[in-house]
Length: 302
Image (cartoon, rainbow, N blue to C red; front, side, top):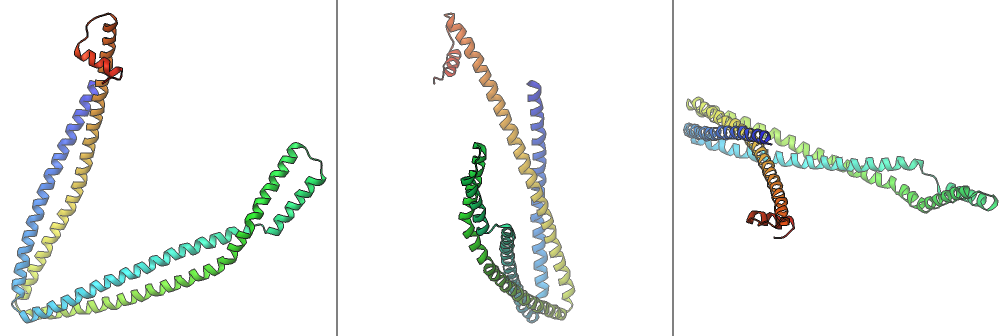
């Protein structure tokens, strides 16, 4: 028990040490993210300052960007509508496949007339043939099975009669949903082309910014680079946070096991003390408060 306890303690300490290292690395990354963002805002301000040298061009570019963003937003909207229509197609196709499977299963269905014929034959056999008790039982079981089959036969027939119409309706719905999906897709393609044209117009306007354009572009690249660095560090933070959650979970598990072990040891000690108290009580000896409490707990008192 002592060896296991020492092992658990070592394991707990190792995990705790690893957790602290992960948390420390996380803090370093978080500071790095803030620093990268601060540099990004500095580059952004420098970029905007350089681009403001041509206010008229920038204003036009701003209008074009707004239009491009609106187009891109509408592209996403049309994409969502297209995907929803395609999902509706998929669900309808599943319903159609299910109906087809039901139809295929019903091809093995025995008609009501055949069930009635088989029942009459068994009924005639029962009335005209001398049977043993076991043969009589088997015959009655079969007649009961046929009787139940005859009760449900009209329902199956009715379902089969309606399946073709339902499948036709589903197929029509599928075609309509496909048409909607295609319509939204075509709108999306047209919007993408317009957004690309708007973007090309922005690029054309940017060429007239003069000598400051090159430096402004460099500032923008640095701005993007800083944001990318922040994103990469943020991804690493997410990984570390997941590791931190896992390590904390392991520590909680060890604490739980240790608590359970302590409780078991305390319970065993209490039970041993209660046995000693019973022996002393039977011998007429005076009990200590601990022995009295252990005895009372063992008897379910208190």
